[in-house]
Structures are given as structure tokens and as C-alpha cells.
Image (cartoon, rainbow, N blue to C red; front, side, top):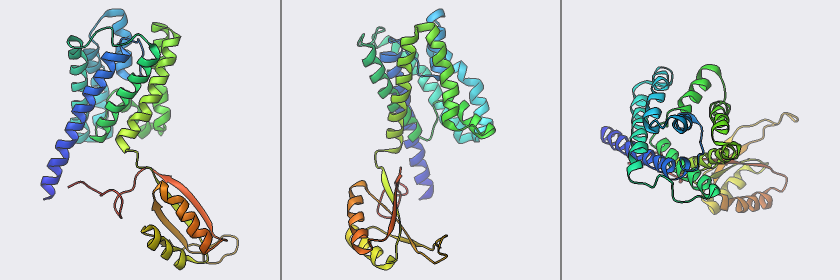
Length: 289
């Protein structure tokens, strides 16, 4: 059973990567290349080189990713990384050069704002699908993760460095207005990729310090039908034991939780935070069989 699950998961991952690579290529051919806007990374650098040389973008993306791919294989995790990343890079390169024969070279609009908006959305959808397939898009994604692993640079800072240099170069090639729209593309694609890869099921975490832990937890279990974990705690100021209740709930249930706590123990202290994903325990399953 475990072997069958692993096989189905691998097939699903590869389907996500194939679809994601195709959508990324659509974004390039219909929006970013006609609009002379780059989204950073090897593909952005390839756009700049193509502007001066007319060399095929897909071929340059493939060749430019090879040294980064080898570095990623060494520093980021062996065979699983290699297979998924190689597939994503190869398919994106093939689709990018192949779609030129089927899609209009000039794109579908001349409006630079629409090109940036839809280019960012389509690119983000493609990236998100690749991430859901547990792959990477190569390029600055690999370099950013290497900088994070080896030099302790945060992922966001690493992307800022790598993509920022490409966007800066695009300003000299395509003009600074196009470069600024390139930043818009990067922002929109990042938000969209996060939404696609992680979903929109953003939950809330609540930690409650109360003198009525049994009654509050009982009300949460009965009214919200959510589980509660009672954590041992000690007040630093008083030195007294203060149980802490921990529970995860949906955004729609937050106001009900506030009512439960305020009516049961008006002197309670509660902190509500955000969780990007909740698995098991009445939420999404830990795995899809």
C-alpha cells in the first residue's frame, strides 16, 4: 500500500511539474517577452541576451541552468531534487521555444499594465504548480536556496539579490519603465505562486491563558467542535502555574471563540495568530491516498 501511495504521489508530482512548466512558458510567450519585462532569474537574463542576439530563449535557459543544476544537486538534496528540477527546466525550455510556432509573437495586447498583470498571474500559477509537485523552477530558485543553506542568507534576501540584478540589467536593455513593471510581475507572481502552492486555507491559531481552562476547553470542543491542547505554563511575574490552551480554527470561527472566552473568563488573556496550513485533526488530511 505504501509503495502504491508513493507511486501515485510521484505521478501527481510530475503532472504538476508538467502543467506548471507549460503555464510558465505561456506567461513568457504571451505576456513577458512581448512586453519586454523580466521576472528575474535565468529566464530574465535570457530575455536580455535574446534582445541583442536573437538567440532562442529556451536554449539559453536550459544551458544557463546547467551549472546551477549541478550545484543544486550537490548542495540541495540528491536524486529527488535532480529529477524534478531537471524535468521542470527541460520542459520549460522546450515549451518556451516550441510555443513560438503556435502563439502570436506580438502577444495578445499592447497594454503594458495588462501584460504585467496577466504575466505575473500566469507565471505565479506555473511556479505554484511546480512547487506543488515538489520541484523547483531552476535559476534563481536554486541559487537562492544555496545561498540560504551555505551562507545563512534568508530566502527573501537571496531572491532580492539574484532577481534584483537581472531586473537592474533589464532597465539598461528595455528602459526603466519596463524594469519597474518587471518588479510588479515579480510581486504578483510571488503572491500567486504562494496561493497556488499552499492554497487559500489560511487558519488561525489561538493561545489562551485562563483560570478556567477546563470550562473554556469544554465550550470550544462542544460549540466549535475543535480540539484543544492544554499546555503547562508558569507566569513569570507571579510564579504560579497557568495552563495555556492551544487550538486551531478557521477565520469564521474566531469571533465565536472570542465570545466563548469572554463569557467564560473575562480576565483571560488570548493571542490569535495565523497558520498557513492545518493538517489532520478535522482539517485537511495529512496525505491523499
